[in-house]
Image (cartoon, rainbow, N blue to C red):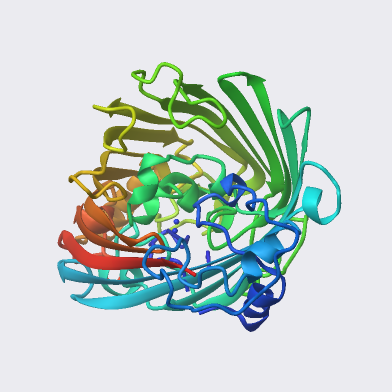
Length: 489
């Protein structure tokens, strides 16, 4: 189980900040310099050039507090001073309160929180090694998970839901070559930072708009995605000006030989192999250093096609090792085994409206679909799609509003297994089929370092038609409302 991230009936975690571990806090002020928060650490800009004469000096903390990029500002000159040595530090806190108003397992709300600390070192500045970047990050997860306690849905309500712990997240080194047209990353990585990513979908709170449902349920332990990471190597190369390829090879199970692995330090390479690859085609993207593309009226978009393959053995979802249904009274109870598992997927992000290229107001749409063989997987198909408007109101350039839908289809094998139980036992038994969640959200930029986000989610056919606590009593549709706040320190 993926650190009890959800109440998923398949026994796997459902997929974006909680109190900070003591050692990470020490790193904050001893060796870090902050940079703006991004969902992908790889995309974080280099620290600004600093005057070599800069030294840490005390300053008035309250000066310009509402306009600064980080709540703590430059910490009396410490951040720019460290920045000249290539060291940056990023500390963020996401807190949320979500409540279930109807249906599901129970009514009521829970608090959830996540603190993330990241230290990066630009080796060009720190060690004189051009093109190198070292990254280490930690998570402190706290609070209660609404989906596990009150919902019982497959579409987990929050992307930060996970078991309470303080853990190492990522630790890797990346080196670029050929004038940054090729780079290699080695170490412990969370692949949801680069693979199967939708830019527009990142606005939404539900987990499945981040790390999708299919790998969440089908990969061992939910795959190397938040809050887990895995040892491996990723190579990224620019094939053509608009075409980029990524390929990664990782250990096959991020929990390794330790089913708890709460510290994130159980490094091993003894659990099979996960291979994931992706082609990314970008259209109408601005050149480096430009704010808009040369043809400013052309609308940018990104299209991705990918696959993953895991070499482990996977249990059949319907039949035992003699060919009988696992719900047949005569079954051995030992599932038939399949060697390997795989999936193919596609992701599209496309801006469809921008009245003025010099203004932030725009509308973009996204879609993401993926499939996997149903005989060895609880989920054979998942998809999500939505629309996002940036700067919806005059003077609110950094706000965003969105509406999106996420869908999970239970595999036919698992569906047939439920039918067998109902037939053999002559009882009313929930037969799993599919589940759909509709989400509406508004993100309000209070200051450059503080966001507040209102959110509402309605789930149809909760639990895909089965109550995990009592399979004979179906769940009512759920309605979740809540608020999330993001602070960059």
